[in-house]
Amino acid sequence: MYTNFNNLDKSSKVWVYQADRAFSDEEKKFILENGIAFVKSWTAHNKDLNASIEIKYNQFIVLAVDETQAAATGCSIDKSVHFIKALENELKINLLDKSQIAFLKDEKVELQPLSSIKSKVEADEISPELLTFNNMVTNKGDFDSKWIIPASESWMGRFFKEKV
Image 1 (tube, rainbow, N blue to C red):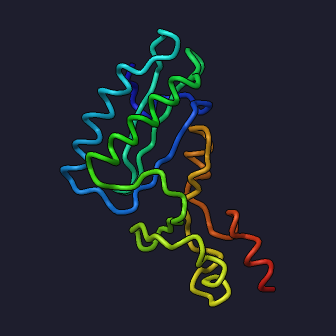
Image 2: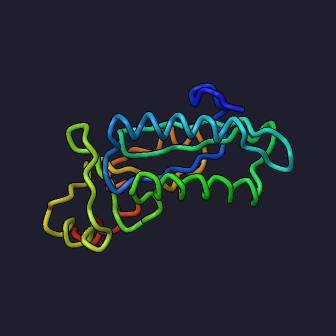
């Protein structure tokens, strides 16, 4: 069952999928149409899941399930990954690659290779205040308050401490 993302309980399970490039307007329409159809039919053990899909910053797909009514199970989670992989194939994008870190600069998403983060911090190319996307959030409450955070408050914080 599709529910507006903003109406989901803060304990709702969240998965954030980061694309390796921005979506076109046509791709966003395709993702949302197919995503809403997917969540409307998404079930776990024959129980409808109260779920939602959102696109954020033209580069992130956010799937969420309100588990207060029915919990997402292994099979239902597998179905969502299958849906994401189908989007990857159809749109020729990568949504499952974790080797790129996304930053928010001037309201635009900028990707940096994970392997370059430490050297970029050391070279002052990434400041402690630079906003980064914490795609590891697991519930809507954390998504709302901890998805976009300063680099120093993320896992990168240790690199800033090493600089001192």
